[in-house]
Image (cartoon, rainbow, N blue to C red; front, side):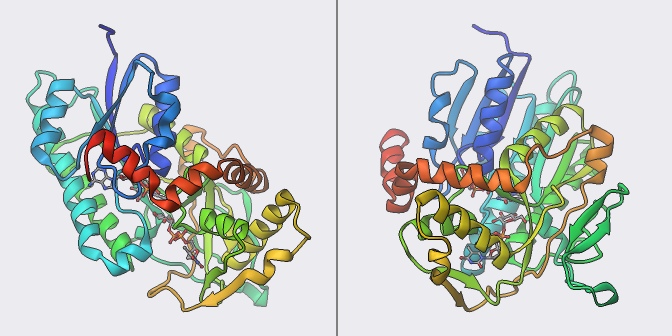
Length: 381
Ligand code: NAD
Ligand code: DAU
């Protein structure tokens, strides 16, 4: 039997970001055993990890993070040394319709994992040494920023981040690690609550924890309820593109593999009890981003330029819609030397090409086919 130097549970590994993190860790660290713990909700799809099925250091466990007894048993039987926690309900619109599920998974599920890690690691002679509970969170916990116009200049304008570097921004303020939490949606409130529990386990019991707060991710394998994959797919099928409100909200976009690389770096070199913001200083007003997506998809499909602009449909705004997110990731860049590897234009091109080339993946997801396939293999969810 292979001797592994670390055994890491990655929760939510069948989801969008989790699948990229699992892939990176399994391939880069054959000396680690990687356990993908996932309930396979509607958002979990093992087709995202098809290429890893035969890897000896990869194991999938279908489990609910809320099932405390089973989580504890798994940690004990597998001698788990680290947890990278991504499992969550992640879509803001769903949280508005069904806040209870968000509180259950995001708050109680995180608490169940924390308690299991605490109990198991405390039972070992070395206790918390060489152990880490790494919690993946979001910039949405900080609330929303204003769109400001300094000296009457229309955004975007050049601002100076705390690193001293110049960036294009839609306002003068950013989210820092020190920014006070001020969540507005049931989703962000549940994530904020889970972040507080993670820090409380450090302060109260000494559990070694790290929390990171990242901006909007995009790239392959994102569930097509989120803006970018939804719009790419709708353009392909000539369906309306539902723009919330006036399309004036601003999001800060990061290519998902750059997030996974940051997670790898922080897992190995981050300081216990610290928080790191992750983001690429890449703000886009929704309507401008949508026009870039339309242009790229039309070009790659050979449609006349601008053909799909006519699909834009302004619809009722999302309740409590946060106006602007913008992450200052200077701490991560300065202390650990991370920086995004892709310019946005390259990232979007790569992403659109991936969705167009993987229509079967998209069709299986939109038809629900992927659920019955994996239900047969792992039992009903
Ligand atoms: P996702 O919705 O694509 O995937 C979530 C995964 O968690 C799925 O595989 C699902 O099956 C699993 N899951 C849900 N409930 C579970 C439960 N009770 N037990 C076990 N597994 C369960 O989410 P994502 O977009 O990949 O986000 C992953 C994490 O990163 C989340 O914690 C999210 O808050 C955070 N985050 C996301 C973004 C983003 O832009 N997507 C940005 C910053 C932070
Ligand atoms: O900031 C990080 C967060 O980014 C993550 O924590 C969340 O898990 C993730 O879902 C994402 O949240 P958003 O709400 O920003 O992402 P979403 O893709 O749902 O929406 C992006 C923007 O586009 C937002 O301003 C709402 C708008 N939108 C979205 C959809 C789905 C539309 O205008 N129309 C749409 O159909």
